[in-house]
Image (cartoon, rainbow, N blue to C red; front, side):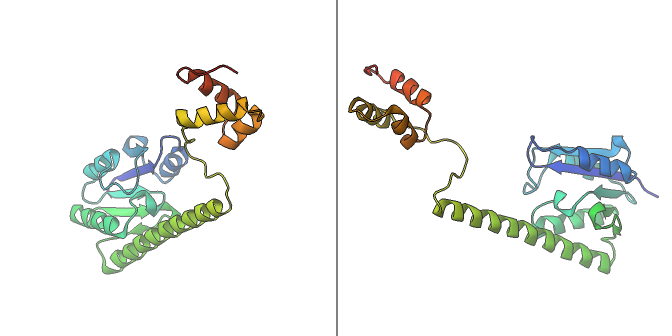
Length: 197
C-alpha cells in the first residue's frame, strides 16, 4: 500500500488551518507528509505547497484533502488535476465525502470526481451570487458596505471648515462627512494655510 500525502489550504493568512491539519492527521497522514498553503487562493493554478504535495506523490500513493474545494475553484482546474493524479498512478481521498477513496483510474471514479468538481464550482458560484445580491441590497438601503474608508480632498475639508466658521456644529459637519470630530480637526490642522478653530 502506498503513502498518504495530505494537503490543506486557506485563502488568507488570517484563516486557521489547524482543523484541516488535525483532520488529515486523524485520517492517518503522517505530520511530515502534510503540505499547507496559507494565504493562497484556490483559483490559482499553481500553489507552492500543493505543487510539492503533487511532486511527493508516487504510484500507489493517495492524496488526502478535507474538502474538494481545497483543490481548486473551477471544474476545469480539478479535471486537469485528476489527469495529473491518473498519470502518476495516485489516488484521491476526500474526507468530507465519508473519507472514501475516489479512484480516478476507473470510469466510475472519474465520473464521480467530475460530478463532485462541477458541484464544488456550482457551490462557489452560488456563494458569489449571494454576496453580490447582499451588497446590492445593502447599497440600495444606503447601508455601510465596509471596506476602506474614503479619503477626503483638501477642498472637501476646506468646505467643512467654512460650514463650521459659518456656525454649523462641528460634530454635525464631521458626521455628514463620515468622519469623527477628532479626524476633522486633524485634517483642518493639516490644511496648508488653514485657519484655526
